[in-house]
Length: 159
Image 1: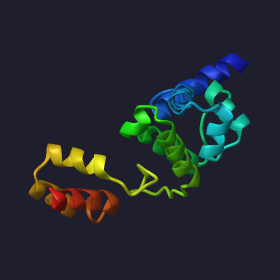
Image 2: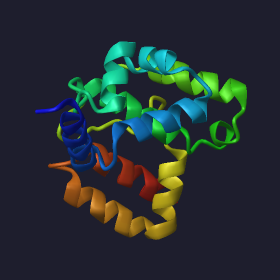
Image 3: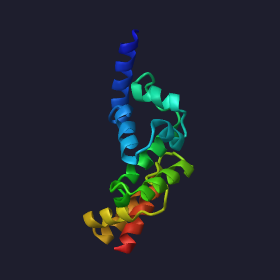
Image 4: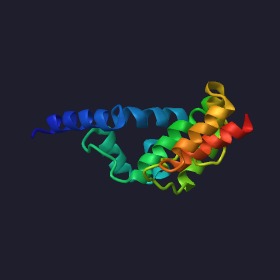
């Protein structure tokens, strides 16, 4: 297969697997955190050449699920008000949190943040459901999705 056809196929696979080309996602992080691609690779725990290959479509996927988990963590940190505002100390703290994180990826625990501050998620849940409904949902999910159930339970208790 010709090189450009391989790249096009890989980018199509990235859209299917990740929702959009990884190059787009990585470029947004580089801009949002005002860092080099090489430093972002270091934060994510991937080599700079490997990240470049994934971004350009020469490779279709990120093979290590922890790297993908860290990328998602960093994307979600963009929702923190001080990070979204571009405050340098918040940007650096978010990058360091993700760099130091050792997420585990399992069937029910894709990490959403490197810190235990779930205030945004808890507040959002409280806006869309009553305390009793959150508690009932937690009971229903407890066996199969304990991490989600715990978040729902905490939202229901703090309302």
